[in-house]
Length: 381
Image (tube, rainbow, N blue to C red; front, side):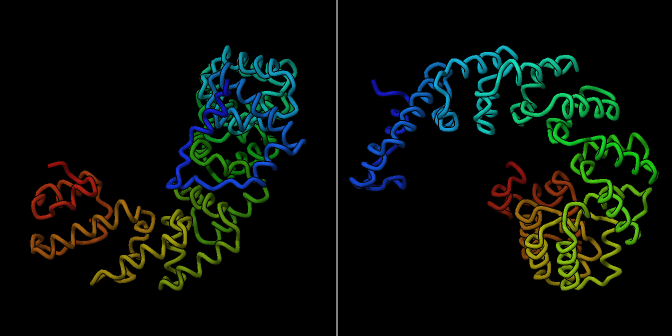
């Protein structure tokens, strides 16, 4: 009988028109099937992969990837016991496959010494089985981390700040790195420093959930980011304060200088740059390529100069393909057919909600726009 993993592989279309087809030379066949060391390892991998497919209904891709990482496993029953425990603990087949895609060697971990103690702690913290499955499927390496040095103190610190298991689970699903860092040396000092800057506890909780990576920087780095933001006139009481800090933390100083150079080349003065950063710091996180593409698009529009971008820098954060281009196309068609009597302010057009734009510029002109509105999903006829 041909093992399922082999059947899956040989069932691929191998006609000459297939992009996967390549002629196999006799030499390559001998290398694959007659090299003694490779043969033993290959047989072991195929045998274990076949076991995963037959017994656990794994996909051929996951089965072979996992088996290839476990060539040292002689008895698959150890893997079976780990899989059975995960299923009993609330893991679905997709949870298990997702975990193995990230860490195939999970199945060779000690069930008693490594895996079960972590699940016991999660139960003690009253995490639901579904939440544990979601968190560990996203980062199975958690099971290899120290309980006493990482997992227990990290969850305790997070709960002391966030106040509930639900919020702790939310942040761990977003960024499980919190179980890998020493939060006593990163998150907790950063929180205290932000408090000294005037942020309230509710603001800190909100920012922690929105920008979790920011709180894992070294405290010395956070202080440098705050100083740079302060030097640029960002008010610590402003809603943009934490956004400015996050923006600065997302790039090296060299990358920051490149971004400043780009804005200068576009025509921004130093005052324009500082004003933009104070108002909308996230603009500086937009890729250079996107900034250039949006600028090129807007500057080709008659009566639209760089002043449009300087006055409305938020335009640089919008989607080029799904917002700016299609809306500009609609306006140009309507103008060419003299269907718009008053002058249209592009900043207003781009900032409108999708619903408002459809109602004002698309739905009343479906016949005139022909296929444009349908192509961009603006309005059903």
